[in-house]
Image 1: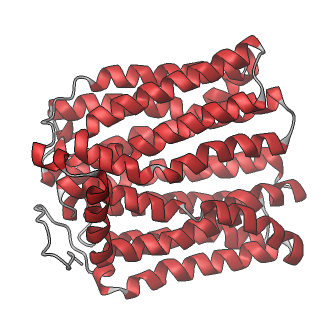
Image 2 (image 1 turned 30 degrees about the vertical axis):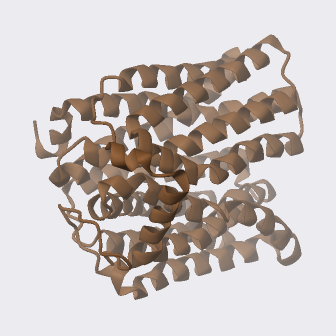
Length: 415
């Protein structure tokens, strides 16, 4: 087996890899299916926004708890438990939609359960990989996961759209619910030692405090997370919120916007294939430099809203996001102590996600006052500047690859 596929020699990784692919197959279908399920019940943008918010708010609120539970009770156990909860809630949503008995409040309540489960499982899902493969195979393992997952990002929404059109959104949601449960069963093949008893005897508050101390004392970690609290707010507002509005106001149209998003997913996929042969000696230098490409689609669409230009910009953004994603996972997995990893990821996710609703709420009014294209241009420029300014921090740009991880002395971090 070639070096790029070497992680698949590891039994635990093979089961985890298959479980994640099954899970991702359903997840890439869920967004389209849920949106049309809500609109099937109530032809209202407000209703759709309510259901989506019901999912995203608990996802942010419970991230820290998910990190503590994963480090305390074991990451595979948390992934399995949250998959069961997500699967059952999604199947319940599907049953209500299929039988024609769903109401908006039903869908919002079940979305909140799903968001809670997602929050509890995400730190475990992110933190388990270093337990599955040798440290020198982490880059290969991340890419073995990324290539098929990015392919599913291209195919999943299209398959979901076909299912919605042919058999209805309820059945598409049922497929998603079933994949959660199947992924949980496959994950039972992963055999990992449980956390040591000393770790489990600590209180939850002590665990959180220990994670926060590590987070704030590790310079590269909090600097990048602080940067992404702004970058994600700008991206969610400038691209995800104003982008569809601009598409409806110009010749791009709804179908064109779908092509732009597909081009972004193709960028993810093509980059993940190319990265197999590229060495990351400075993972965050590469990552933050590349993620600046996410400002390009906002900038070019704001200057000249042309479909082909938007697709090229979105493709480059997908490339930049994939480079950053690999660089960030390598930095976290190689430099954060294993017993701290899920909590570090939970603080990372909380800081990175917390301002997304602000961006979604703020950019709409800004577009009304100043004009959608002008706001997108400014957003694109600011995005690029913030990403590159982050590299002023020496701890970010000089962070090397590592193969061993040790706990830092109290009050200091690896940066």
